[in-house]
Image 1 (tube, rainbow, N blue to C red):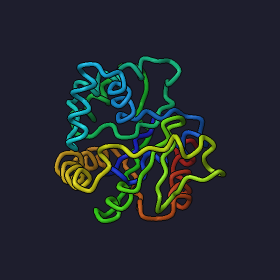
Image 2 (image 1 turned 90 degrees about the horizontal axis):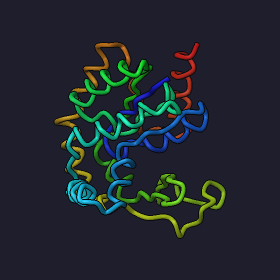
Image 3 (image 1 turned 45 degrees about the vertical axis):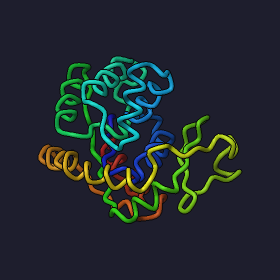
Amino acid sequence: MNIILFGPPGAGKGTQADKIVETFNLYKVSSGDLLREEVKKKSELGNKIKSIIDNGSFVPDETINNLIVKILKNKKYFNRIVFDGYPRNLNQAHNLDFLVEKHHQKISCVLSFKVDEETLVKRIVNRQICTKCGKIFNISFKPSSDENHKCGPSFLVKRSDDNEKTVLHRFQTYTEKTLPILEYYKKVNLLHEISGKAEIDQIFKEIRDIIVSLEG
């Protein structure tokens, strides 16, 4: 099954994606991670992407779509993908529909996390990412510890775009350009809305129940 996690930056998509992947033996595909990998290469494209991300804007659809095509072509990921951060607008949603059909796959469900702006700011400005394992932590809500993070604190970093100004800009952009996708997926009966303000384990229980019902 292929699943889309939907919600504004900081809504908890990455955290829940990791739990879904571990529980159901799926693969997480994050458009943000794919873009950051390109930035690490310090190519001309990577430098352009970095500038766009640092300003809190979205990378052009064509760039992201081309990265997604490579994933869907890979047999390892066949009908086993959790999309985190893609699609972000209707154009990308239509493109994903075309691609999954072309590669004989399907979207099983869309999980939408609803979180208010104030909560998002608190989450993101305190967010930390491990450069070794990719896990996401938060100083206030989900701090790294010896029990939940074996890599150690030296690998924890804060993204350059995780600041209040950028968060507010991205939330506004999300509301204006990305939110209409909810209606699109609602019309095709794929949408499941979830409160992103609950405890992490409580949110995951709701997600797990949805996925299990689909498998049945």
